[in-house]
Amino acid sequence: MPKKVNRVLLGLAGLVLLAVGGGVLATGLGMSVPSWWPFDGRDDVLLSEADRTRWRDAGWWWPVVIAVLAVLVLLAMWWLLAQLRRHRLAEVLVDSRDGEGAVLRGRALEKALAGEAQTLDGVERAHVALTGRRDAPRARVALLLAPHAEPAETLSGLTRGALSHARNSAGLDSLPSEVRLREVKHGARRVT
Image 1 (cartoon, rainbow, N blue to C red):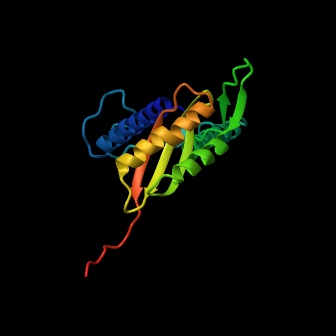
Image 2: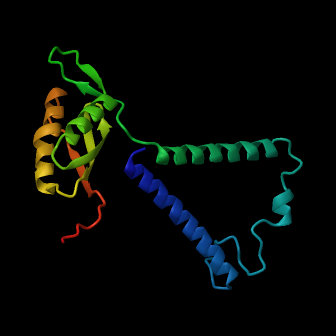
């Protein structure tokens, strides 16, 4: 799900919950509320007995209520799973210059990038994840640096080496990358 749609849905849900909750709280505290607000006093209930029992005898009422609630639960579960899903790229389109193109598995390119990044001086471990679209991938690279590593040299080597090779071998015009550098935790050296 695109980030903008996700943020808009979250914002709308938050505004609705805030407005309804604030109105109920204001009514409960005895504050004045607009004339159109359905609750008008401290002792007012959300559903009167007449509202609760109005459709009880209709044969269609309970199946409709259960179906609507089931659809709402399914939509909420789908949205939750969409938030938890990893957005890794399964395959990358490679321009084979014959008009047909080829497909490269995303995991293979990730492993090749990580393997080449680990050969850099001062890199203890590398992790690469490809995101984006098949024809316009993006790389997220996490490097764990040894204590003696020079971050500027490591980043330069990664850009000129692994990322450049991956971009050229896949026939991509560009390979936007986000690189995160962390250092290995180590104890202080003692000088005697």
